[in-house]
Each structure stands twice: as structure tokens, then as C-alpha cells.
Length: 326
Image 1: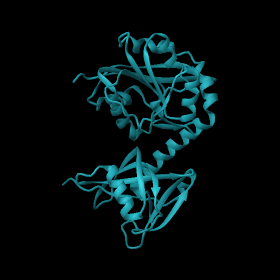
Image 2: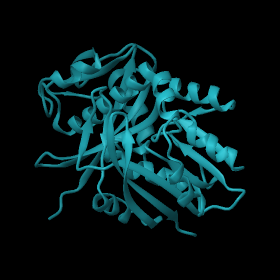
Image 3: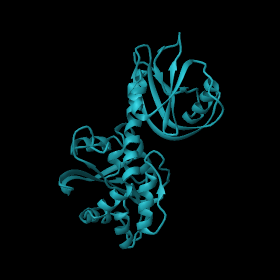
Image 4: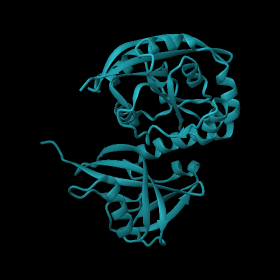
């Protein structure tokens, strides 16, 4: 008999660069284990409402729920838990403990040292990957933009643009330096550039001479607004468990029949470079598998190519997909 899955929420609360963690108290399930605060969803309750309620009931604080971080599914034997993680802002009140006996505010590099409840571990790893990548771009925004603006990737534009009308509206998701947005604008397209890092977005804004919104994969919130989405070497920073949600958000942003371009570094599994950036890598087969489970998209083309990168070469896997007409 299949075990029912219990949906539970988790709040990742960050203040002054430190993350809140709490320890399960004596006599409780998973006594002595650390976790992100949260609780079980009630019937007809959204995760956001659940978090606000639980944080009030269990910790006596006010809160505002932000971006979705990811999920984790863990079989505890007697039950299966699906843990849904969100960034949460602490807005009011002092923390009071009910089911927990200790609170700590930890630096990100201290998270791995804790004895975590098993279901929380994948969320910890996803958050660490996001935070480390964000820190790299914050510290190196101008140098990164200067370097990547000089890369010639013009041959990638035509397969994408050939799918679009001359008056198409393009969303560049993760615009980086603004190089590709400028190329599309120069060809007469209407372009909306966004990036997930505020410092990189500021560099692109200065280069393009127009606003660049700070928008992450997790907060992308458009509805049938674009004819095309250009996500070149940007989704590769999205933790693998979050990719289905990110691709769903891209689909929602596209008009019916709209086209998206995606590119990833070629490889099996995930990797971290010397700067601490997390990469979610794909082969043709694994990317085909990911896209194959998304009924909103039809694959137009998946292909690989090798490009010069710094002192060597990098193999990439690229995809063009079309949103089904409804």
C-alpha cells in the first residue's frame, strides 16, 4: 500500500547574512535534530498561509513569505514528508519556543555542521548553492560583465530569432552583462531584460541605458507576456530540484506558441567551480528527459557545441522549445 505524502512547509529566514535554524525539543519526533521552522499544511491551505500561521503559533512572530526555494521528499518509515522551502522575512515579534528548545543564527558556511532532520538536508544544500552563486556575482559583477560582454555568441541567435515574428517581445532571463539583450534590441525586437543579481543587473542597466529588473527563477511572475524567452547560460545556476518549477514559470511567461532557448554546460550531474558557483549540468539525453516530462513544451531542437572559454573550451548543450497552443 502506498504511503500518503504529508506536505510540510519550511521557512528559510535570513537576517544580516545569517540563517535561522531551530532544534527539536525533548520528547518530540526527531528530538535533538535541527530544522528550518515551519509546519504541516492544513486542508485547503496554501504553503504561504501555512508558514505565516505556523510561525505565529510556534514562534509568536509575524512574517512575510517570499520566493520558493525548493522541495525535498523523505521517507521516515512511518510517513513520507514533502518539505516545501520558502524564503521568509521576519517582520515583527520576538521568538518564543514551543516545540523547539534552541534557536541559532548561523553563517551559511556553518549550516553543514549541524545535525539536520533528514528531510531538511536537500533544502540546506539547495540554499547553500544559491547563496554561494549569488555571493560570487555580487563580489565580481563588473569583472564578470566586462568579460562576458566580449564573448561572441552571435551564431546562437539565428535559430531562436528564426522562430519569432519581427515584432516579437523577448524576455531575457538572466541577462548578465546585457550583451544579448542589446543584440536583440539592435535588430528591432522589444526586449525585457532581467537578472537575479542586483549588482549584475545594475551593470546591465548602465550598458543598455534602460531598466533591468532584479528577478530570479523562483520569483519570475509573468502571464502570457512574451513571444520568446532567452535563457542563455542562466538556468545552469538553478538547483536541479527547482528546474521543473522554473520551466513552468517560463511556460507561464510565454504566449501560446512562444519559443524558449535554454543552454547548460555539458556534463553529468552538478559541479562547483573555483569561485564557488554551482552549475546544474546536462547531456543531450538528460536534457531531453527533463523536457520530456513537461507537457507544455514541444522540443524543436536539442544540440551540442563547443565554444572557447577563457583559457580553454567548454561544451554546451542547447535547446529550443515551443509552448503548446491552448
